[in-house]
Image (tube, rainbow, N blue to C red; front, side, top):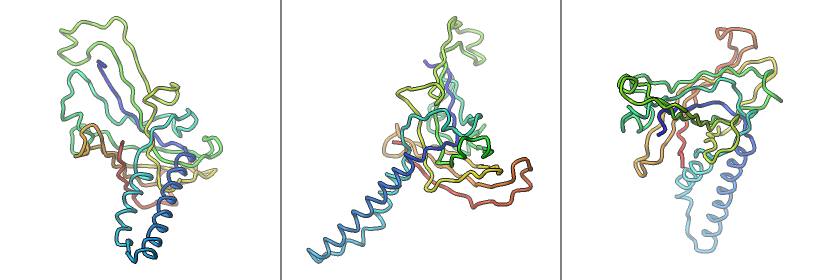
Length: 240
């Protein structure tokens, strides 16, 4: 138990948490600058050779780690979250649990979101993406189970989606380095892929790679009338 599980992804607005992470990163780098100056002045030791490595560590920790959050329903910017992966827990293998790879059969980690600014309260910007899951406790649906397993007379459903209220699972937010503004009269499209792989250090933890490209068009026009298309962005997030 559970018998079935589904993972979802959606664009969100969550500027408070996104800006907090950016501020903590900036603060860490400010402290580093003071440390380098103090160490040089007091001991004559130049620590700046370590700056690029320190910067990488702080960026990964504050900017490129997913954050547990408790989103409100109006912070989700689409009414159609993307189903990323569906698992039948009776038949899935250990290989299935290792993550989500573009090489696997039936890959479903691609997403395509159209965000019409005028339908979103206050034209809230896109702060990033969030993931959550649902699970079911119901009768088996695989070929063997349908024929031989007992039926579950009282199935149950558990959702950790924002509209379901508080659960201790919450959601995982993947914040962008910079917010994407939504402009009145325009539709912003975010199209990309998501991959997940177990970390080598801890098999219970995952790294999540998100690639996406943004474009804009006047609301009511087709995709062939985009007047702006951005470069592809790629980020690898640690899921702590």
